[in-house]
Amino acid sequence: MANIHITIDDQQLEVAEGITILEAARGNGIHIPTLCFLKELDPRASCRICVVEVEGMRTFQPSCSTKVRDGMVVRTNTEAVRANRKLTLELIMAHHPVDCHHCLRIGSSKEQDLDPKFCGMCFFCDCVRDGICELQALNREYHVDNLPFALEGCRYEEDVSLHSIIRNSNKCVKCRRCVDVCNDVQNVHNLAMFSRGQDYRVTASMGKPMQESLCVRCGRCVDVCPTGALYMEESIDHMLSDAHTYGITTVGMVSASVLPELERLNHMEPGTLDIHRVIAGMKKIGIDCMISEEQVVNANQELAEKLIQTSKKTAVISNSFAVKNFVEEFYPHLAHQISYYPSVQETFDSMVRGEVAGQFGWDVNTIKTVVFTDNNENGAEAQEKNTANYSMNSREIYRTFQRTGVDLRRIHSKDPLKFGMEKEYVFTDVTGPVAFNYEKEIQVLKVAGKKVAIAHNLGQCRKLLEELESGSCPYDIIRLCA
Image 1: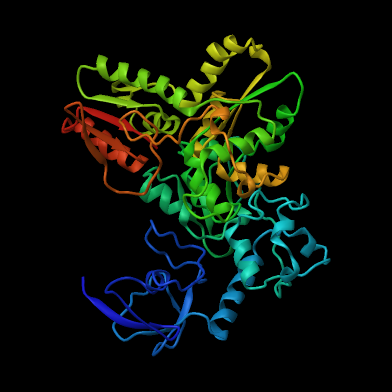
Image 2: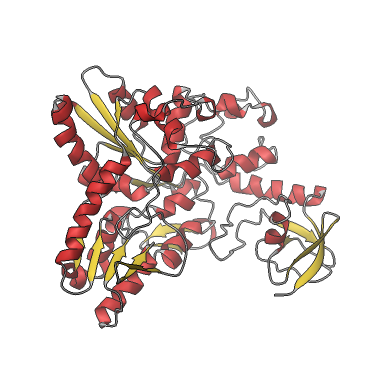
């Protein structure tokens, strides 16, 4: 693709033809704020936070969806642009319950006077995304505190029917991220934009409670929600209570999948946080024992390999809670062709209550297992199937550390072996855990002379299941992940 020349904020740049203004700016270190934008999804330009001035155009243009053209002159941070963005935020906040920034609500402070570090240790704010909310961060950036519009207040009840994924429509900013992930990536088609005017909002299966909807509890909507409109049921208080109660033994397992998000939340450079420092943090909050993930995954892999060896035709395997729900909902007639084996957290819980408890002489009735992973479906599985006492994602880990004063940036693990971990474990084989991604292509590889296909999301699962259903499946082994 040919390159063209544009000017952004008086910087003359050479960029690829066909990219957006936002991509050109970020590729050259120029900050443009966004709220609805997610690089893995097609831009919707629904929030209008990323607007910029383009010379020759009468109105502000959304940078996330406006393509660059040769000779274009763009200004991203003029007074008029900033005023427009602040007005947009004030309009959003007029329809958003403000249960964060308690000191602003009672009038004891202004936004620009708040210390984010102090806010992280404050317990007065009620929102689960307080301190890690994209809308809150934008309000800080544009000094939004005294709102010029009448506040609407809460109009909808929280949907807690699933007891794992919680929906609070009052905090929805209509960015459509959750809808696009649910429909275009996961192909579940559970979430949609509904109604019009002031009632225009995201709903599940035409307004049904989540428990009665098509939701398969993959938790990907929670991953992409920028506010507290979608979140996992938290268990911080109960977990910390058990961790500090004499007579209760808490045993944890942490996945390396939590590292990238913890780095981002703690404002650390990518690749600077290792698993040993996280484990040290777990020990500081009171977790009695940490079990190596390698030991658990190896046991889990053995179960998968046995299923593959005993299969006569195409071996279709999965240990995903969400995949099983997806198949039961959309492909029940194929359920008999899929071999399920326990999830890693289920294997971990069984191992702790079996051989580990026997080795250390623990009373199984006083053991509480805690799984620290970045996969939200594990939290839903723990809630519904009791495969672990607690399953906490990266955001919940971060909030737990904030509440207990653990600073990962100040922990230096001198002797990682004492935590039972010899190295970081990254699994790429057919049976190991696979991190969720937005790639549209199914991963295909050769393992021991067999053609293997790995689905990394439910949209890819649907494609493979349809091939299996039609008899055109070209693979020897299929692994389904959500």
